[in-house]
Length: 311
Image 1 (cartoon, rainbow, N blue to C red):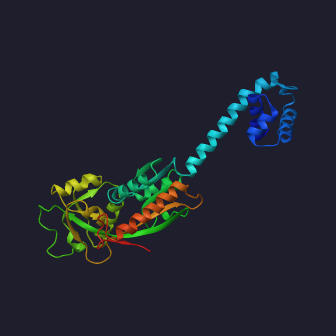
Image 2 (image 1 turned 90 degrees about the horizontal axis):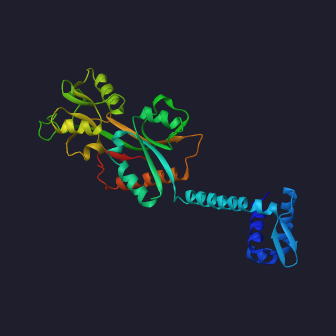
Image 3 (image 1 turned 180 degrees about the vertical axis):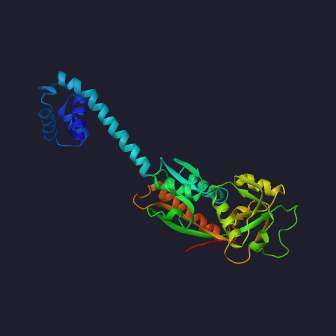
């Protein structure tokens, strides 16, 4: 049974005339009749009482007509739904991002994407890179913005490095500067009261590892906060914090860059190798890259001294 045959049958049933139905369908009348006969043979029953000038449905035809109409309507709906998704009028994108990126350029990227594709639903999963890698590998995300290298050597993922960002020391403008110099050494964090993120934050692990490499354990006055809480604690003068340059630039806090090039991180966009991202996700990736190129030119408040777009 073919959709074309059902369409021919429904049109004949509505017009009660083979020639008129053929004209409406823009097909030759003999071709239409042949298709109706083929449908009747497949179903094993006549669908019409045929008499000169009088076409009427048989009992089998009466039974088939509402079903044929429903099938044709469902087919049209399916076609329309698929076209809307294919043309990005509907759909969804599942994006994972670290909290620091959600606090920096991700909102601007999502706003830009939403302006271009308002019918696409945006779902954001905020978490550490390790958690995002697991979620992405499980197929629960389309894209993820993470720090590299990939934790756990995730072989099932493909990652494209986007930008390299310097980490800085943020402190309250009302408190004394953390160093007398223009730049601060990691060693100067020794015995400094620090505000620290909760466990699972990439920044916590990075900062702790850098302090230990310099020969000391960091001293925490407050720990366990999310990004907004850490910024508030620093603003209140409870301690200093190591932050990404993009976040610190928007925070209103005093920014002190590190000396040397060891305190920096690389941001990448990742997806599964074995599954091509859907078109909406590919468009989000394109918007992301365009936004970062614009930002690298000095717009949207990204500091060129602390952020560098990678080729």
